[in-house]
Length: 94
Length: 332
Image (cartoon, rainbow over all chains, first blue to last red; front, side, top):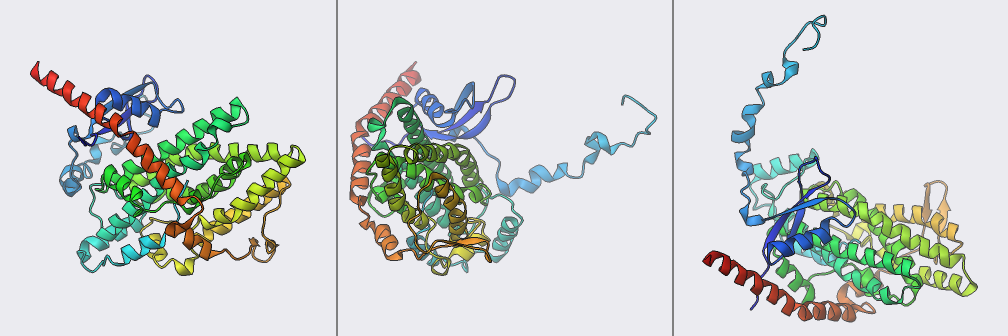
């Protein structure tokens, strides 16, 4: 028997109130072991209070080739930002 | 720790021609890199860039893992509990650094098993520094101070290397590495201020580790034909000789502060250059160690292979357990 352990992506919540953030990956046979490995590899210096591990093959990523289709439409829509609108200085609280 | 830029890598990469690459994509890639943009795993990249990175990152990872051996050698013989706890933490960090780097290399399409196999079969290289023995406790001080010091010098610019996963791994590593150097220097300070015998031990460690540490920066620039390419691709950000000079300049005053003597009669401050001049490095020794003729090269690989083989039943059992549980859950 010679089965390679699957890859897991590791997410750490630095402290309550913040979202989990991707920090790297580990190989492990199952989820429990992935948590234990992630704890040893990514939280040796109090980096977090909570861990998520997700099987890497469960993640669907966007393709860099679709970059233009996905992200360029946002570039010419500056009116989505508040600074697009000129409001006179004497108008307050807006 | 850092892997020495090895000749083997240059030869292999020279065989990879850029002429086969689509010129338009290549130009767009080079423009991105030149603008200090990061390249991420799914982005298009030239084959030579991918291969160079796989080699560099995996050699770097192997160096971290093999680097656990010379220091692990002293864990059970640390002089007191404080030193033992520190050394354990440091060796564990090296293991962690190896794992960050293996994971970064895997994003380029090589598997962990392929890399480990390449190391164990002797095809992959690791830093020559770990093929020297750790004879006394002072060597643990010298390694932290000099070897990790040289590693930091190498690694700091790599935090801005062009490949995103490598750069991110380096950021973590650099953050952790600074404690390694300081704990080593502290060991040296204690010995240098101790009894005559302890002071001699510290000097002896410096004598043995100084030159191998300078070799860690790799061959001189004129014998490093791919440096230009690697610098252009931001895989490397400074040349071997530039980094080596920087290391000498910061380390000599640290040796002076310890009251120890750097084993180089030609070492002299050059007012005009604003740098230390230093003696010639024995490159024959360097290449011999690269070829695997280092004092403890065989011992290192035997230890690695044994650890891997002795751990096989654990890996297999964990995989079997996961499989069985998976089937049980599927059946429910």
